[in-house]
Image (tube, rainbow, N blue to C red; front, top):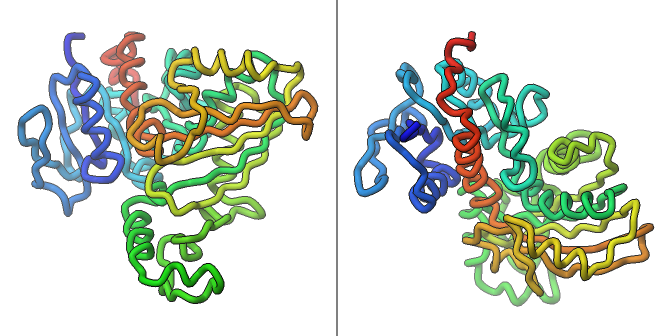
Amino acid sequence: MSGVSVAVVGATGQVGSVMRAILEERDFPVEQIRFFASQASAGRELEFQGERVAVEGLEGADLAGLDLALFSIGATNALEWAPRFAASGCIVVDNSSAFRMDPQVPLVVAEVNPEALDEVPRGIVANPNCTTMVAVGALQVIDRLGGLVRVVASTYQAASGAGRAGVEELDAQLRREGLRALTFDGAAVDFGAPRVFPAPLAANVVPLAGGLAGDDTTEELKFVNESRKILSRPDLAVAATCVRVPVFTGHAVSLVVECKRQIDPQQLRSELAATSGLRLVDLPTPQAAAGCDEVLVGRVRATDALPNGLALFVAGDNLRKGAALNAVQLGEALLERGVLGAGRASSCS
């Protein structure tokens, strides 16, 4: 096909705005663009490729003729609307958690398991959680070289992972005067009652990201279950502790892994440096990763804490590679594999 009819669903949101920018940056072959958002945003105009495009509401929209829909509207709305878009004949790439563990929905990181896109029975492809996305590229390399046995992950998740409201809450807290007084007294500054996070995030870390689901949080369960699915390792032992940190953008993960076979750290560094989507650096930080397409990987070293153990640190932009960039890359891969425009509408019910 010469060009693609693309919908960005959730176009006015934080991730949707990055999706729009990345479609232009990567010269995605857009023949027609349509932007969808809530009814409250309907009629608002957004710029794309030098033109003004009106935002459409979802209710009553004619979905005919679309080839690809990039979704970032949350799980509840995705559960309602993604099947409707797919039934019209397009492929949906959904950024929410709604379909990730559905066995009929491929969960894909573009550089890690693109072969999963060869079969899209429901017409829906799931984008992984942004923290999982940052870690699995390096984990796949380790698995290939040494055979993963166990993964222990501690995440350092940015405020933007909780949306614009999270960014605004952190920004307001950091503007409080007298933060230096916290050196001697954690109650010296009154941040007010937090609305987005369970405790003040400024000058703090909060070891509770996501809602509680038993003893674990939803973010921790996402990391465990999604990494197993992406790596095709359903029995892999994975433990995660997800922590929110006072960073605006850029998720980071400390990884300690056990392998079946010993891997020389220098060999691992060489393999990581040669892997698409990763960049080997001396000091991977969220600030350095913000705005980058690659996941930064560093601090690679052996550890005797686990048999054939390795430790490393990764950091990636949770809005770009962690969400919008991977979604666009999946669109590119679907196009390359001839999946887009393959006549799905006739087989949908």
